[in-house]
Length: 293
Image (cartoon, rainbow, N blue to C red; front, side, top):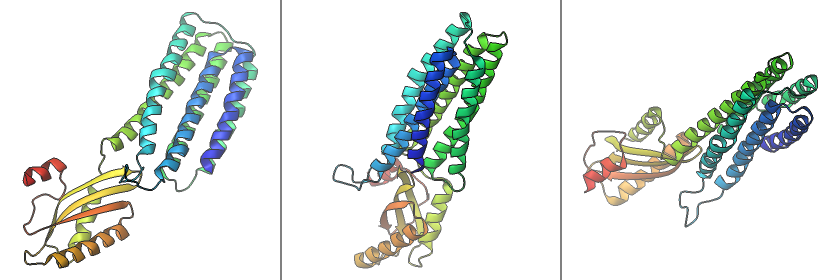
């Protein structure tokens, strides 16, 4: 619901700024409009990917569709950097080398100030505890407020005899778009490359498993994100070598249930039973397969 309201609001803001650009000719106004188009794409991507990620697992996607958001985030971020930010940067250079003064600066500044109000109001809508998706939206709202303030200064200084300020402010906004695109790319690419939870997660898994008296130690644990707050967990436990298969199966079921109860982010657990202790808690698939082969 919050994302839908945000997308609708930003669509109206973009239309307002495009009309203002047509009337005043300030490049920074066009830059702001393009920046907000980027915002709409981000919010729409977050909304769409949320729906895709909720689809249940199927035969082609046995671990679910949780990475849909991250894939779309990488694609959109590349577009930001290679198309919008780059083209806007070139336009800013052109406006600096061939400066021109826009019209109706007071009107342009008033439009920017008025269009600053909705992002600030939306920031209050996202206040309090936020999901990671809402956190990304909140960060983008803060970026918008910053870039709009920069645009106001660009138009003001351009109107008092420094026409290059229009181009400088446009370049500033282009850099903000590029930096935001890089941030989105880096965050999402990490998940697609098989990002693992931090060390505290492995410590929690070890403590939970070793709380069962049958477990002698925990080793060769591999945890990978399958999507936002969804973790695939693969782990080895050492037990008495005389334990029967039935007893081992029942034990792994109890351990898996306890882990999922204590760590809700864990969506899938695979537990291997061993008769000999391992050396390392956290490991990689390569390390495990070297022992097998």
